[in-house]
Length: 274
Image (cartoon, rainbow, N blue to C red; front, side):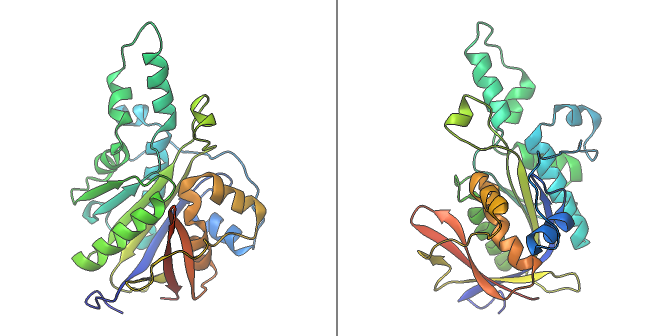
């Protein structure tokens, strides 16, 4: 299927980035999703984003660190230039720690909020830091759809890649919320996923993804993971709703995977070898 087939949208996965609890990168995650090595949950380790200038690096919180880490991993794996790629950034709730710190300041006697806290509070902060990091000037869309944010971003990125006939970077991420916000929004740790999606197949292609206009939106139950620890991760961090799709890519399985999207509507993605 090609971009001019109006009954379906098809893209090829050219690169993947992954960082999360017990998952250090896509290669590590791929082996664990395949069952080739055991998955053991551990706190997410985030590296300082060396692609940023020193001043911005000091201001970077978990949202910036995780989104840049997975974005660079996916783009490098795809063998593309980050500066040339339009992007889609999607997150269920943005920077939980920064939100907590701003709320704590507003509830104190000293209600002055630092400029760094303020500019890191906007939902497009990760996209902005990505542009600084890479020099990227193409369009960047920034989305939020609560627990369906990964699927919303995937829909947007696939549509852009096919309609505009260009490779697109998708970055999905969530970070933990401290108490007392955690009791209302229990996201326990940080996880990020990135996909480079292209309308053309290449020698680097990892999988073919197709959305059928007739049945990509479905009321079928979502796919879950058989490993209890991975399924707990999928269920508790919204960006980890991507894991069933990543698992099908890892095992090179031709199938349809159903992902969380809206309360009464899921997203069905056909996955095949490239």
